Image (tube, rainbow, N blue to C red; front, top):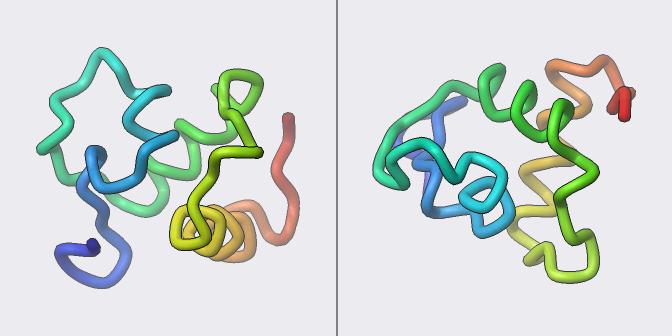
Length: 72
């Protein structure tokens, strides 16, 4: 769940938690930080196991921070 608009708890998004393995799962990060993590580590994301919620979050991050593009 979001803490405030545009922030996320790493552990609330399963694939984000996996790619941010070196960070505390209770850390709160901004949408921009989340987008950067997904973009830099997309090759490690298992798209088949993305939950509908996490897929919606990723899509929103791509629209807001990637201007519709995820450079992977």
